[in-house]
Length: 386
Image (cartoon, rainbow, N blue to C red; front, side):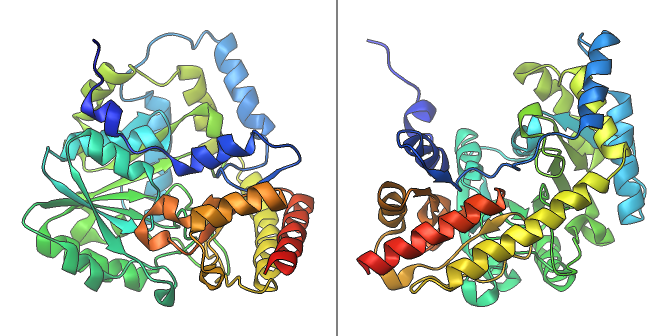
């Protein structure tokens, strides 16, 4: 009899995908589950990829990525952070998720503990589990505007703590860590010599004059930081699967051999498109942000007008994380109820950790019309049933 591995049997399933698949079984559903821009990849980026194919950029390239893309990434951070980065500090990956995996493979051993916010992106759990590490949740509270606090991180640290994953702007919370928050976290990182895996894939989706600040911008802690980024959210390139890690050259230098054993290299014509995204006009990024701002107001204002819902304003990303505790019902049950009885698919907060119970995650990366209709359906359902 064939038996499965322990990883296969125990790998945590994604409740986000479960709700997504469940929604596909029903008709006339407004899907506010998966975090994907509802825009098409800009034409100038698609043209660059087509040109790359015509130029026969269809063969193997360096495991670490093309020189052109690595230099583009290094230049981006050199300009934005005001400190020099080189292409040797860049590793190209299959999206942000593989970038995180490479960072973890390169830095943690079985038994090592990795701190993650609770609630947080659930795929962190699976990747840490796959490597034999232990994910240690650090609670994040609504009264702190869902911001990870240094004192809570300090309480979670043990002799086995090796790394911490930061995510700002946050999925699922929409919170943005400000410079003062980051500096307090940096003190804890330095005190305990932790590796920081800083997931910054929503760096350009930020509102209300907030400014993205990376922990890598603090000189004393820079060598401890691996920044994770991708082009998926910023440029509506989720299906292109291109991201990168940038940081400590010693750590980055081992990643190409790991990539060789996993996937060899990101296709070079896709890397060509990524170069165009980074180096080309950023006007489309600003245009998409204006749409997200408007849609944020439609959804959050609408939800806050529904009895039983309470939703703080999203500072970054395209998610809302409303409190539904007044309904006195598990978040998964309530999410299924909204799906089956109101025709709106959302993700239960419990999908993101124990601290997510009593909340729902909505993606407002959708059309104005769908968001208005979703709010209308939910309000009508609540008024009838509660």
